[in-house]
Image 1 (cartoon, rainbow, N blue to C red):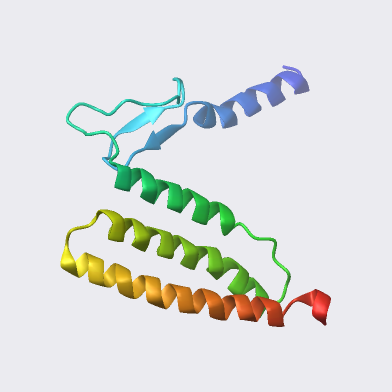
Image 2: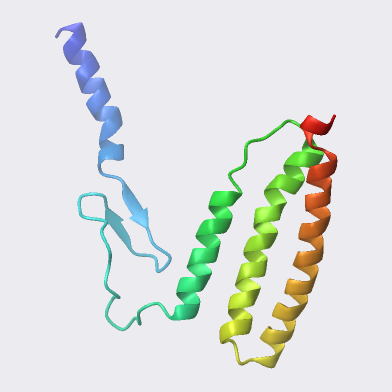
Length: 136
C-alpha cells in the first residue's frame, strides 16, 4: 500500500465519527447531521413559541452576541465590557417578564432586577470611561 493510500485511510477513519455526528436535544433525543436544519414546525403536542418566548430568545441572542467582546488585557475594563451586555440581557428578560407575567412574585423580582441592573450598568459604564485607553 502506498503512503498516500494509508494517509487517506487514516483520515477517513478519524473523520468518520465527525461525519456521522449526532446532536443531543434537551428532551434526550438525538439526530444526525444528514438532514435539513431549516425552520421547524412545533413537534406534536408542543405549542409554537409564545410572544414572551420569542422575546426571551431575542434578548438571549443579542446578549450572547454582545458579550463576544474584544479583550483589552485590562481586567477591569474587560470585566465591565463583558458584564454590561450580560446585565442588559437580564434587564431585557426582566422587562419581558413585566410585560407578560401576571404572577406578583415574578413581577416583584423582575422590578428589583430592573432597578439593580440599571444601577450596575451605569456603574460599569463609568468604569469603562475611567479605563478608556484613549484617555490614559
